[in-house]
Length: 404
Ligand SMILES: *Cc1c(COP(=O)(O)O)cnc(C)c1O
Image 1 (cartoon, helix red, strand yellow):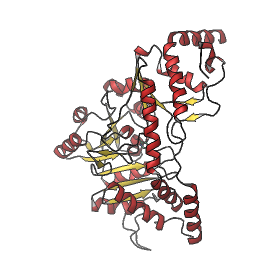
Image 2: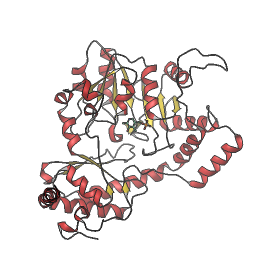
Image 3: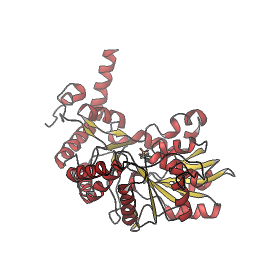
Image 4: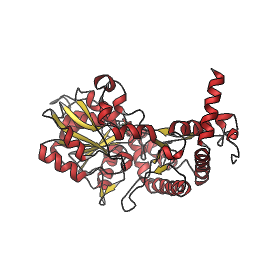
């Protein structure tokens, strides 16, 4: 239903545009029969975890898909980051962006490695190599780049800095499965790269993740650490944890791999729909992907600036009332979350771009559960809200005053 007046908006009591809630990161699910057949096979075999045949098959298929020597499947992306950081010998300080999911920093701080927050590029939202260089101190042991929204970091510049300054280079590639840089798949850069296969990610294994690397020794250390340091039935040679992926997760992964082209096609179609429908709306900038590269198009990212005449937060409120669960990413910024905001209360002074983005970025629903018709309606709502921004904000203020 088209909104004619501001008071038709659900935030003011009108009927919501959608009866069912539209989410960001609703899981992509592959062929159900294939999945159930695999689960049957697994139950018949009574091999549920500990590097079973599905995990071995998934690791081999992922390595072939990414064109990388080693893929180690993990129980989730966060533990994969922790193990990779430890296997790389990271300590002291590590340079990371603050415009990321909190797990990037937590994986370091959990092992008492200090994340040093670095600002990002205003166009791409990716770690700014020039600023990385400025954050290096004698305590710095490495850099963790984040391939945000599936876009590759400036891998050449970061590799050059790491090489010249003797630092390790790890990538948080949680967003970047099935993405490339100069046609080379993400998974091949830095010392190692870490994927998340969480349910909300482009490709999921319910919970899960993986480390990809071309370094034989590093892969060996990561395998030991992921399985308590066992080298034989009764031999432990290393301190380790439990980072193993279970067979049911690998079954989901194998099924998802067969559906990958369908997932990308749906996401790409949705991205094109959003781009066309939002093109003329003032004050909105939609993040554009490089069409020459492999991309998963998993994130529809908008920046809402002053020219929109409506703040990002009011727009989110309007959309939520219509049952469109747009999300503020990465709000309020990792440096403003605990424990970092207590440790580094002034970090924001060095992060002007991150601060602005945390106040302006909005992520919209997409994936196989969202249709072009849904997107046409969402775009219409956004355009309507932007066209009536001042009136909406006035009305919200008036309601709040009268409620107080
Ligand atoms: C999802 C995510 C993680 C954590 O992965 P999990 O599998 O949920 O543990 C880490 N970093 C980024 C950037 C993420 O988006």
